[in-house]
Length: 318
Image 1 (cartoon, rainbow, N blue to C red):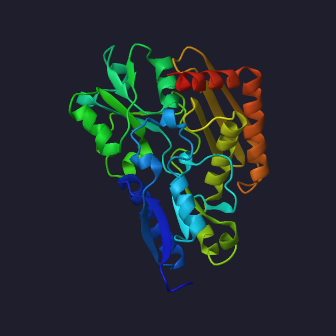
Image 2 (image 1 turned 30 degrees about the horizontal axis):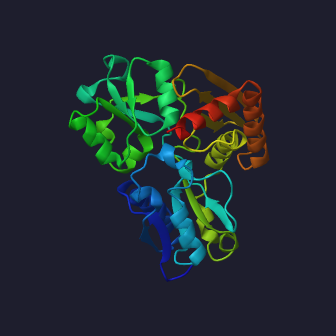
């Protein structure tokens, strides 16, 4: 193990640095390798445009990938749901640590639950996936696009500008703000984004098999199998993280269960399907890929691709 600290590239936000520090500390604990964080600003951090206008995919990761290519950092940590499904040339996911709670959380005024919000309440979220699934549950609420870090979004509730915001439960935990949660959406009610709650450790393919091989010490095979199946659904639908697509896989006792949903942005139309396969080992990624592909193709045959295309058309309409 090198005595020189390895350089871990991370976005500058509190959320990103917190989760990168978790990964760094775990690597050090398991391998003895010292890690130092290199703070990098991505385009997604500085633009004021909403993610739906940007297409979402890649806006938070490209700057880190540029630094990897330049050799100024050794590896990077991303929120997995931000990563494009198409692999980047010369880069590999060296590790996917064990996933945190993947659910979405409501942070509402007065401690209100989602079902108790009065009609016309304003709910802030920057995710078309969340808007679509929530609109199917409560079309009587008003869904407002917002941006900003967790504290900025929570502040809109405190100030009275919004009645509630929706955030990832895992992210709130990483920044120490689960105290703001008033309700949590189980997957039966709202499917999370593919890869939500999981982190990705990315480095050059060559170095993953060489001097950075120690990164595999934080890889969690069940989580990798789950998120591979979820991300294949997204890939087959040719959708990105700004699409109204939810997917959630669970591995246990030799079984991999995958649920997916594609919902029109107004909640009026939805295709929801589920499939389960026996899997000999969570390291059997071919089976995970086949599961995601087969479920997605079933949904496409039922019109899921048209729902995604309509959502993108709405996004691109001035």
